[in-house]
Length: 204
Image 1: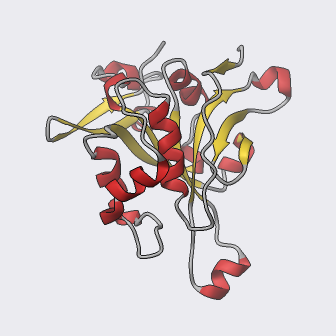
Image 2: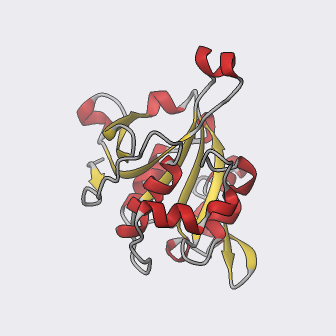
């Protein structure tokens, strides 16, 4: 199973404000066909209605962000146990994967009563046999180039976004082993011509 990768994308380092979602989105848009490369603060201003006063993206507004006409992402929410490394590898043969990562609360977050998630862009995936463990190459607006290990994902929740027009309309693409759980894990929501429709992870 060879490693798979897109060219390393541009890093937009985020400020101290919790705007990682916009800075990672600017990276994704710059390198995704049929999107207009948009500076991070312009992404933030265009989508400001979906944010808290401090600039953080509201969890209840994630679908509106992805469905917006200049972003146009298919999206889905996964528990770490549902995350499939092979699916990421399939997606990376076509484009870049946007990810919002929700980790268990740490002591500081519990003390101040605020829980934060974080966004990054996946552009590569390893050969697990070669490197001794499945991991993904990401551009992270806070950490820069960051290796995200599959073993870490198991304790996290993840929202994935991918170019809607690159997803498949063929339900058979989701039914790799004939089980309902596999069908669910390869399923995406995508707003197309004003309608919310189901799409599937294409098989290379």
